[in-house]
Length: 271
Image (cartoon, rainbow, N blue to C red; front, top):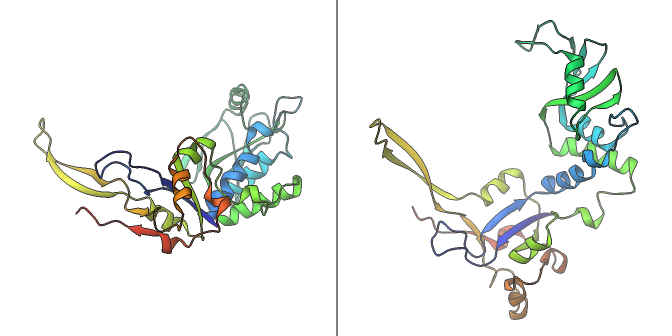
């Protein structure tokens, strides 16, 4: 399943304003499982050991092991080992600059660790003299999230199949001012398409330099919408509830998932 968040009520009279039924956000299943995993694996839940570091068995560390590119582990007073968590490649370096991936790198390890540990929400794990931390690019693909959820299910009673993890965690205000719908799954490419505006590149002249400047302007805030009056098969009372901003409405728990292609339409382009 995936979720859509729709604008309820026109937010202005021009096409450049959000209009009733516009698809404000499109949440894939990958995005939904990611946001719940991030919440459960947040550093705030990890706590500290008596030495002021994060415990090695924390879910926050499991999350980083699954999604981060590098693990850094202090191996001596002056050196750190960088491990590529995808390839397993290892390199040790310290205060003396060395070539790593074509770039000269060095680190004053003791000063770095001391400085990092002073931050109240630091991400240093392990024991004094053997601290570990993470860096590099992050990969939140479905395959990586599988590893995160395996750790969550191994260490907590939570299961990804639990109802609370099936939808995007919308707040009460979100449910008052927007309409959330459950739909069949779509991928990240479709999600990007659903929230695209209609834009146009316009040429102007810089008054100071006389040079031609290209500016991208928005013609319509969103190109995709849902006609809530007809597409969702809601009766008059349900429509009134949806448009009443004083009460939260969540059709995701009241209605079976919709078929996205049956309810989402593309607007006529301005240009």
